[in-house]
Length: 171
Length: 432
Image (cartoon, rainbow over all chains, first blue to last red; front, side, top):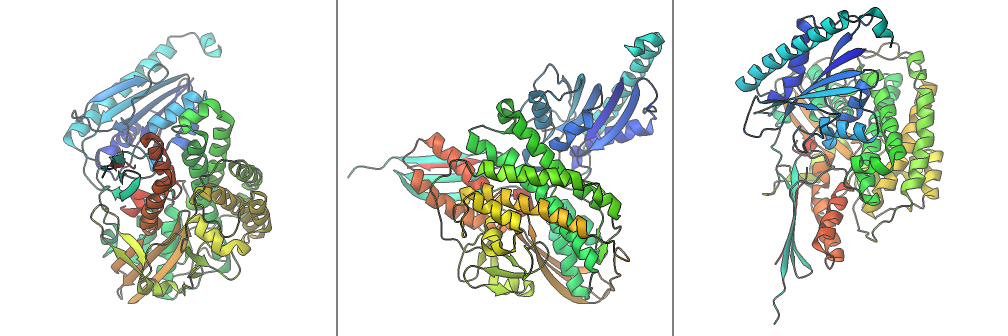
């Protein structure tokens, strides 16, 4: 069983950096585990460009993706979707190059049966996306909160696996 | 006298284009009163960012202008700066730059043909809806795009915003064995591109032709990527250093991107159709034959057939990439040193969407004093509006919904990259 956490965004576009910052802070917290561990936990950064995003989850059973969402008046709001159950809302994620972003990646993968076994999407609502803009205070707070939630998620996963008998891992 | 009813057709968010814009068409009865391609994405001021930067930083900064055609920005920049500084590059580096460009054309054209433009012809709202019925088609498009991405990632260090291009060459040249690893996939991509061209040539195309002035680079021996004179089908034949004597940019109130026009002549078209019409004899034999098999005439004046021309350029780029890999010998050094001096340089290269012009003035320390960047979408903008003006007249008797869809398709013929030009398009059709 392997978990990949993907932080998406653009570091130069204000709050669009939220997903990337979550990935970097998780990395700094030492959340990753070696590939031989069960679960192997890997953290990567991604531009959010959908056509290559699908390739990022093909060999992982569990995927968590973190990205900024478009402003709707509640900057810093964190929403979580189970992509296997929920259809992602339109116009929620800022589109990437040629209008193919995270939503399009998930929906295209769903249509083509290329979703992982589990896919959780953490959306952090952004406030400012202009070039070279700083991270807003609201998103800074939300990034810290999502990092803590994901540290706990990985920790629970490791405890859960350690309590299982070795034979369970062979199934 | 009976008063003619008026209609306004608006697309507030034109999908499947890059960047943010809107389209507004006003009709009185069935007569077109006004057409505006409104680009409201804010200006990005890249030219101002470049001032005061050392010339060696420019390729990495301009790569950030676009996620789909960063190599074009890098290539126009390095060629302009090399001309300013009198740098002559190694012939192997020249070949590598052509290969780098092949990668960008393959990924960009595959994205546009399969994911953005084919849904128009098959009657789907987008590629996701199309994938429900045509999964194999989408898979093929994704694999083709990835073949281009692999070239870019190998040569540029990463797929998006590559970091290897430098004034004088590359920071690192790939080994022969690394390039050979691309051959199997590119051989598949060549066959897939030929099949793509045959497939899209069978679509239904509106009967619509315009008398365009086509503008592209022209090289005596090659289908153009990085080098050549700027030519047109109406006698233009200039060096890049004469570009600003012949072209000018105009501000229009409804757009944050400047409209480029030929001085004294007006609008013109850059991009795959212009390149194809002006350089057909420089295409590889396999691409020329594919074009004939697809029924493409030279000149092709129907912009809706640009999807077929892009597919032919996919064939060419895959074939050219294989040739370049086969003939590649690594350069003695990946780059030559460039020495700073007060100077000026201009260059144009062929981005997937057409001619991309850069002009730099440097001081004696190699710092940028001024920069000018004119992207292809900015050059096509006025021509897109003129296409729409004539095209809407042809379909004005149809229901508003149908006109709206057709107008969006007509804009997508140009694969506009609005983020590049200002750096989604909304359509508004009004009937009086």
